[in-house]
Each structure stands twice: as structure tokens, then as C-alpha cells.
Image (cartoon, rainbow, N blue to C red; front, side):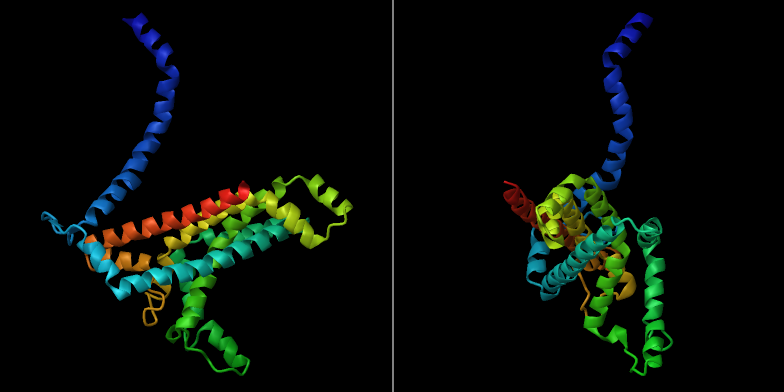
Length: 297
């Protein structure tokens, strides 16, 4: 019996070791992502308020209500508009920072750390700092405007300004990780390519176009997809900074899902909205990948 046990262990040792390593992660994925994902999709076809009673089957009624509601459709466009601004500026600014970090200057290690810190700090803490700056009376920004002889601005009453500050905060908080990824890509480009291009008379713009950008094509695709997922999940900044205001100007779909599910206990609509948002995210990602792979060919 003992011999058989040893023989079994020898035959299946690699598989058992692999399962012992993968098992905990698979269980974690199942409990935190798999089951909630399936439950959210199923809830989209029911009416349920969270009470311990059998949910009512409503079929496609939640989806029909979504596409016939101006408020829900508007929240999609706000998610796309605000998310698009966040994505574009974050990609550009993070690339600029990575290019700066790639230059051999003194103290660049400290700069990298400084730009990564906002991502480590809690969102609620960093939002509280920004909100304190935007207070109409006694806030830091209006205090500065007053000293410059300008009229104070009631930021929270202006849709344009609040969208601006949401975008600024998102970019400020998420630039660091993206810049580090860009930097890794920049440092992976063979320096001899730059030297050969310079010998051929290439200027800085031509180096960027013909050497740097082609060398970062894979990194750019990764960062773009990462940002698509990030901006389509954005709700915490909106919740803490604007609560969807003023006048619903920042009421993005993700924040509406949060309100439907955890404030109104309308889990059916929250599930339907989540399914639509998820499909939209997948669609945008697939379109980008199709364009990216087409360029690769």
C-alpha cells in the first residue's frame, strides 16, 4: 500500500503541485468574480429588491425600460464622454511623463515615486483634498483667485467645471501606473535603432514617428485596453466628488448602477445596466483590437 502511494505520487506529482498552486486562486476567482458575475447577469431578468422572497421573473422588461429611458441613455453618453476625456489625457500625459523619466536627469527616481503616490492613497482621502480646494468660500482655489483680484467661482454649480475637475482628478490619480508601463516600453527599445536613425539624419519628430511609436505598439495596445476598462468602471470619483451633479452632468452609467443596486435596491435594473455596460466595454475593446491587428498586418 505504501509502495502504491509512492508510485501514485511520482506519477501525478507535477499535476498535484500545479493544482495546489492554482486551486486557491481559482477558488478566489470563483467566489469574488465568477459567482457575482453570473448572479448579476441572472438578476437582469428579474425584479428583486433584496428582500428574502423569490425574485419576480420579468424577462427583458428591465432592458426595455433601459433603452426607453432618456436618463439611462444619457448616462451612457456621459460615461463615454467623460471616460473618453480621461482616457485621452491620461494616455498623452503619462506618455509625456515616461519620456521625461527616460531622460538621464538627477532626481528622476524621486519624480517617479511622487507621480505614483496618488494611486496608492485612498480615493476618499484624495477626493477630500480636492473638494476642500473647491469650497466656494474659504477654499484654496478661490482664495488664490481672490488674491489675484478675480471673482471667486462656485465650482459645484458649473457642469463644465465639475466635468473638468473629475477628468483632472482621474488623470492625476492614474497617470503614475500608466507612465511606469510606458517607461518599461521605452527602455525596451534597442538604442542602436535611434543611433542608426540619427546617422540617416532623422530629427526628433522623425525619431518619435519611425522608431519610438512602432516600438511601443504592443505597450500602447495594453495601456489603451487597460484604460478602456478603467474609465468604463469609473464611479467612485463621481460618487465622492459630485454625486452625479450638477444637474446630472456627471451622472455616468456606473454611478447609476451603484445607486440602483445599493440605494434604491432595484437589483434587476442594476443587473441589466451592468450587462449593457459590460457588453459596451467588450465591444469597444474588440473594435480597438480589430483596428490594432489590422495595422499589424
